[in-house]
Amino acid sequence: LETVSVEEARTVPPGGGPCVWALVLHMASWTREVARRLAGQPADAPGEGDWPPLPARRGAREWGTALRRLDDAHQHLLDVARSVPRVRWNDPVPWVDGDPGETTFAETLVGIAQHDAYHIGQVAAVLRTLRAPGRP
Image (tube, rainbow, N blue to C red):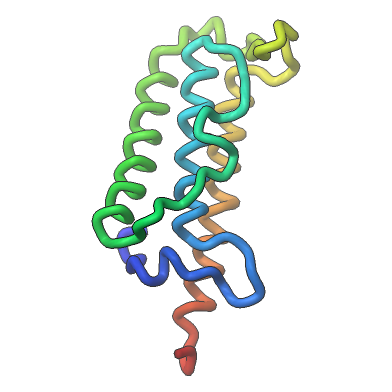
């Protein structure tokens, strides 16, 4: 993501789909939600929403802020994951409605890694399209 320009980040790929900036905000939002769950809070939708809106101003400063927020979310998740007692990793994550849920703490952590891997693949595909030779 460090090599992604502001222009690339905010450009919707040909044919539609989320821009890189939207993907970064989405990943950060879900990473924070998973950190909440691992910290013992009941599972819920991310507080910022599934796909948080892009800022009204989309300049270099705002893009830098989005990247830092994703980095900070990942660091916070790692810190929280390190604090989870070993005996809790196979416990189900409770849901906000009180349902004990079926997904364990361990599966939740693996799930966010898979989620980010999927979306980073989307970022790579968008960049490959935007950086294709002969593209204006």
